[in-house]
Length: 211
Image (cartoon, rainbow, N blue to C red; front, side, top):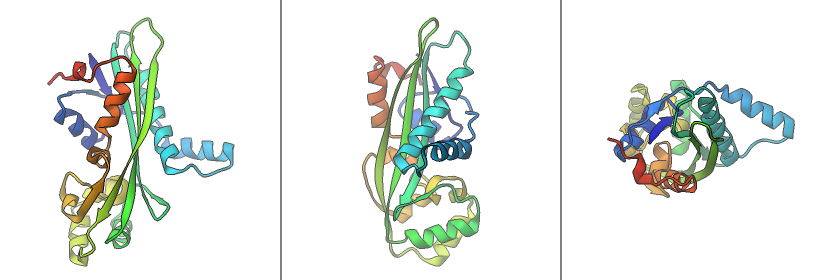
């Protein structure tokens, strides 16, 4: 069965490859800020993190589905993640200054990584079917991280383009003391959640193994 990852995230691609799935990849054409701003303006409220990531995961998957070849027969997987610390949503920092400020707050603290998932079953001549869910994992950072370690980590550029300004599966992993929840959630997608969603669409997880 074909699998299409509606993401260009290297971390999500790596996760699927590690569990035996070699997906096609497509870049979703979604203006994330505009989508969220539009919903919040229409509903007159600020979306909590779990709604935020689920909304974007579903929009990304749907966008890719709308541009698939007519003969596509398989699954499209969309995801989105964001980190919440002290009730504040922390997206990608983009700049070194913001990343350093984030790490000064995160030392010795615990935050929650929220991950939204959308899986859409697509088959020629049939209506698309979707299953979706969120997953959360708590992340506790070491309290003894030095300013020099923060500066050196930020200088690598790794934390600038990831939610919360940290990774668990690369250079940032040594600064994390504990994860409560599915560890893959912190990488980019909860594999256990994906497996449940795939089964809801009447597909066995093992059917996706193609490596």
